[in-house]
Amino acid sequence: MRIVIFAGGTGRRLWPISRQSSPKQFEPIVGEASTLQLAVERVAPRYGIENVYVATNERYAEIIRRQLPDLPEGNIIFEPARRDLGAAVGLAMAHMAKESRDAAVAILWSDNYIENVPAFGQLLSTAEQLINDDKAEIVFIGETPRFANENLGWIGLGSQVGELGDIPYYGFESLTYRPPLERCREIFEQGTHVWNTGFFVTTPAYIQRLYRQFSPELWRHIEIIESSINTDDYADVLARLYPGLPAISFDDAILTHLDAGEALVLHSSMGWSDPGTLYALKEVINPLPDANVTKGLVIDSESRDCLIYNYESGKLLVAVGLEGMIVVNTDDAILVVHKDRIPLVKSVINALQDTDLESYS
Picture 1 (cartoon, rainbow, N blue to C red):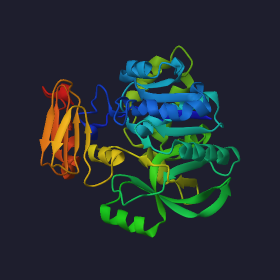
Picture 2: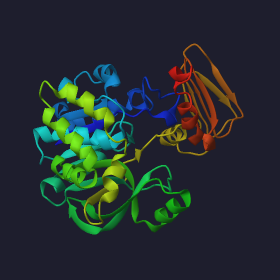
Picture 3: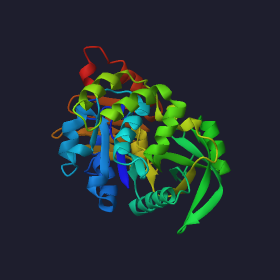
């Protein structure tokens, strides 16, 4: 099976750890390796590095080559502009279709954390088998929810359809993107939904059929780009057409149009998390409410429920009596924010665009 790992986002909700110049997927947020390196390490031993592809913005070419020296050069799919995931997934599937339209492809993301890697591998293999056995044309991989998380999407489960090995698989009912907290609590209590990890296994033929049906404008241009792949004209065609593609998410372009029963769903407790915000990162590392998470040269006294990161060697960061605070010190920026105000950080950093401070974003 071929694996496509998407690594093109900017991760502004994790500023100042994540920057335009080096987004969160290239940073050692948990442990010593970047989340991109961890994502590749989870799949390369099973499927071979030659079957692993990374889709990213062309500005990150050198970072990827440096962090993944064993990845074949031809396995990096470069996007010449940011046009959201509707365009990015379409481009990646065009490359996969050039090799085989009907062979299974797994879509994964570079910025997740998975505690139980063997459980993840088992789900991935099961999803591949379901595709190969023509049980479904797309199989979603979910995480059994641990709490009512309003920062994630949720997948509604249908009835159990069958079992492969010791892993049950279910019908697909619905996708809900980041519902309000009260709705999250309701569906969490119902026990009929799982967290949407964003992982799925499918085929290029199926996804391209959905593009033709639900996003014909995107498909019209992607089809032209695909016809130029492996030719001398590819770079020029991509540079001419891709920046003009509609900026739309893959969910809005494709997945929200799926009907109930059109897919299968697998899920387990694999310890999956999406550290998309700094407080979510704290919960990944230590979910205990009274615990503090620190990195670098840090002394804290009588603080609780804080994340305190100091990336500047030779500088001591001291925190006293803080509660629910996020403090991040880098070599050129400092963030101090209460955990309940983290959603405001992205808008503040977005406001730096086209100003004298844009280089800090």
